[in-house]
Each structure stands twice: as structure tokens, then as C-alpha cells.
Length: 98
Image 1 (cartoon, rainbow, N blue to C red):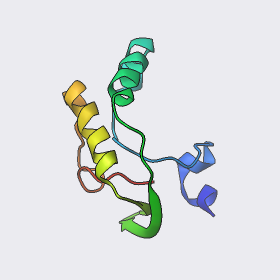
Image 2: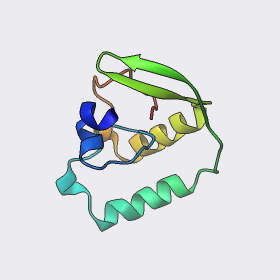
Image 3: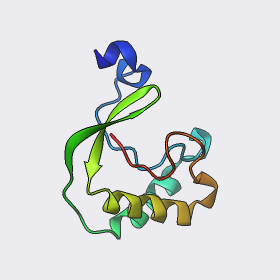
């Protein structure tokens, strides 16, 4: 069913957690950005999540990560490093989701 609804699923994008969208324009994402992401995110401890409830944006049904604090910290770390990547009006600001 998801493949019929979501273009990303049709394109083969696997289940994932969105920490920040949009990020940088694809033309800017190169090996140095990958390395910087590794450094930024690698400084955070691992954590466990549960996905026990669903949430909804107008055109999206998603699983709500609980707790969301560790994911919000990752979002904050990325936007500190790349302030130009701050969230726009996609969904609710700062809401990590699957």
C-alpha cells in the first residue's frame, strides 16, 4: 500500500527516521559533508526508540518515535553545523518521524 501512495517508497527508499528535511541541496552533499555528518552525529550516544503510536500530517501517516528527545538533539546538532538547513514549513518544526 505504501508503494502506491508514497513516491519515496516507489523509488525504493527504505523505512527510516527523518531527522531533518530538507537538508542541503543534493549538489552540495559530497564526501566532506558525509564526513562532517559522521563527526556531528558520531558525538552522540546510541539510544533506543519505540514506535507505538501513529501521527498524521495532512498527506502523511507516520510512526511517532518515543522518546523523541534524542532525535531532536540530532536535529539541533545538524542545524548548528549547517544553519542554512533549518527546517522550513514541512510538517511541524522539529518533529522527528518515520
